[in-house]
Length: 406
Image 1 (cartoon, helix red, strand yellow):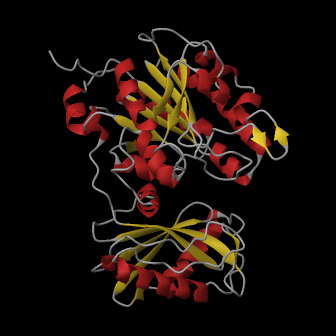
Image 2 (tube, helix red, strand yellow):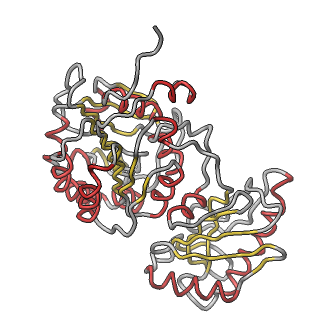
Image 3 (cartoon, helix red, strand yellow):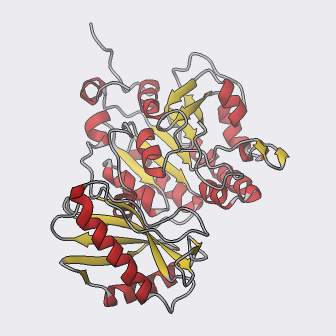
């Protein structure tokens, strides 16, 4: 990836339109403990995606680096053309931005998971049975009434979707180099936050007392009788996509975290979308006013984390039915990829490369003539690239980069 200062000089503002479809966690693996089986991308009936793939080039993406399992934040920031090792955006900031919160530079934002713990604080469900959003709001109201401050730090709770919430800490001396309280597995005790440097000790102490107080307040509200504190973070300082790439971008997503990340990089964010039909209609309504469209598909990741093989296939097939409506709009460049892989057999993010399909109306040298699936992407002419370099290719294939040098 070239330097940001040079990218600013090379980027061109034109009317050519780019569609980036991120099928979250869509990548999978064939080899499982049960034996060899097709990946969901191989098994899914997806005629509309495959028809475009026949006229595209295929490849694989490395979200952060070889062998590194990425979180959703760095995986997405990479796809948007930023170096994920330079811009480390905390999950809390993403979640806060996703529900429209304004976080000051001195504040701490935390993503909370309502969870279930036993009387020894062993986590028995990291998502509290995926409680409803309505129940979430009830619990957040209770917490805001019961917990207003920890020492000199103000505490605010905000409801997200299902089991997710946001906690804001406001006050002096808050630094974010603190570990999560989420053990990342059931059967393990909720963790104490640990400061990674001296300047973050106050934040760790506040978060420990906050975690204890939350458990005290929620003790009668099983299964949501705790909150796992994740992504404890201050806001980053990011240049916008318009500043770097001269793009006018828009986000078409349903989940707060992805809307939050899009907001941080300067995208217009459409709110209150709940399904593919609404997402597609929102994109159509805004097609003439923007030239970069980020369309997010969430459930491929959710079902991968649940280990639900058939449901992951089903959501790929469901999205495919809407994909033709997007193609028919006439985009100059279309990319379909994942931010990271979430194999059903692993029930979580993995270090495996992401499958990439890149279609360009005008500038492809040749076309791979293969369906969109992992094995074909492994053999595709695009090769294996760092995901952060995909933005340069999208810009180049849409005629948005000037020549470098005389």
